[in-house]
Each structure stands twice: as C-alpha cells, then as structure tokens.
Length: 113
Length: 112
Image (cartoon, rainbow over all chains, first blue to last red; front, side, top):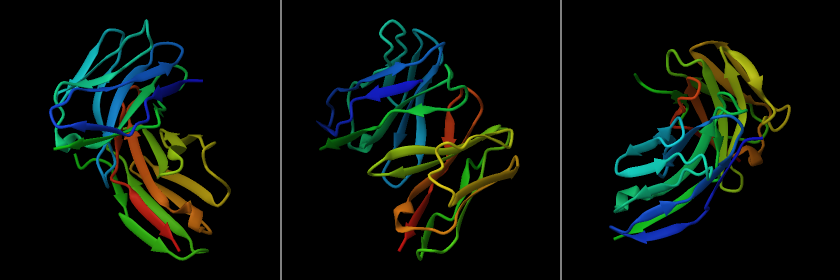
C-alpha cells in the first residue's frame, strides 16, 4: 500500500540556518504530495503541495519539489525563524489511496534564537 | 469560510461516560475524516466518509467507537463507554479529492 517515510527528528537549528526535512514515498499511480505543519496546540495546516512530477510547491519561504525519479518531496527553507518551530508532516493522496491522505510520522523542528 | 469547526475544544469526562465529539466540515467538501493524535501513536485515521457514506472504518479501535454523518454538514464521533486510554486529541478534516485536507482545531479529550 501507499506509505510515506520522513526523518523523525527532533531537529534543532539556530535562527537563520538552512532547513531540510527529507521525505520519500511509496505509491502506485500519480499521487499528489503535501507538507502540513502543526504548531503547538493547533490542528494541522496545509503548508504546500505539488500535484505532478517536477512541480515545486512553495509557501512562507518553504519549498519542496516533486521528484518522481527518486520518489521524494524534501522540504527546504533557506533561513528559519523561531516562529517556524512546529511539527512538519509529509503526506500523499491519490495513487491507490484515492482521496485518503497518508501521513508520515512527523518531524519536530525547534529553532533557537 | 469559517473552516472546519469542531466542538467542544476540550472535554474532561469520567471513565465509563459517553462522549460525543462534533464536526462541521467546509461546505462543498465531499470527504470527511476523523483522526486521533497521541504522543505514542502519532496521527491515526479512525474513519472517513465520502458523500456522507462511511468508506473505511478499519481504524476505529473497537466497538466502543462509532461515527455518523447524517448529512453533508455534520458528523459525530461517539465513544461509549469511555476509558482513560481514549485520552487524545481528536481531529476532524474535510477535503475535495487530491486537494489535501483542511483540519479543524481538534478536541482535546481527557478521560479520568
């Protein structure tokens, strides 16, 4: 079945550091890929998405490129801020899971001043 | 749009009591999902509906859990009887296919 794997962390970075959170997926067909973010005490929010190969999703300085050849969707940000501290979830839908979204385990990010 | 609305935000109940969690999805979204989140297990899909019909309830932990969606604008998740191990944050989400979810703010359930 479809699945998502991501580095589990926790990840601790200094402010203005470069961020990469790795995500790889297994799916048949052509899934859509997502990154969600969960701030403390809140629900998950859609951060960005990509619906086909080579698409780049971007939002709030975060980017991720849909790489079908490596089945990856790594999240990057050039300069993190303290306010980026949260848990980040990689996810997919489509493929064999139809409209169900399959989530990775989440990666906790702490940014220190 | 007000987004996905869940109620209550917090619920504290005694073991053995019935608990009902409520969700109003975004108008026009045809899929609705109930998730449970704990530190130990992360995010677990309990059940999801498409066009008000339950499609997959394989994640419902046991018969004490039940969910209904009587119409396109309302869903409930019921636990009867509740147990301490049911303590978690319960999220509702709605979506259109392949567009990703919109989550509610969650209900934090504590069973004592």
